[in-house]
Amino acid sequence: QVQLVESGAGSVQAGASLTLSCADSTRTFSGDAMGWFRQSPGKAGELVARISRKGLTYYIDSVQGRFFISRDNAKNTVSLQMYLLKPEDTAVYYCAARNREFGPFDYWGQGSQVTVFS
Image (tube, rainbow, N blue to C red):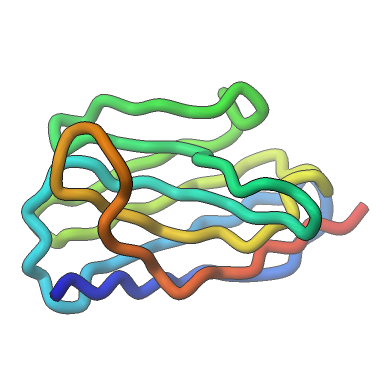
């Protein structure tokens, strides 16, 4: 069973940068997509960024040009580099992975709190 373990949570000032990392501790994941979701209190969870095994990426509009997702297929890791952070980026971020190209995500990380203060 794939187990995603996240690291990189933190509290930063607006305008700063932060990188979240996620690794499959079992190193058995061979599926297609990996991504990052976030959940803020009182708001619906949202997919922030996604990357396919071939490297195709997707970002929500609010992070376009500020966040960058990357993955290492050999190491079964995915990272989210976040620049120019804003208070509205404050959320719990979840790493996720799915076996198929489309559809729901199958595996989830434990969640990482990112707090951006002004």
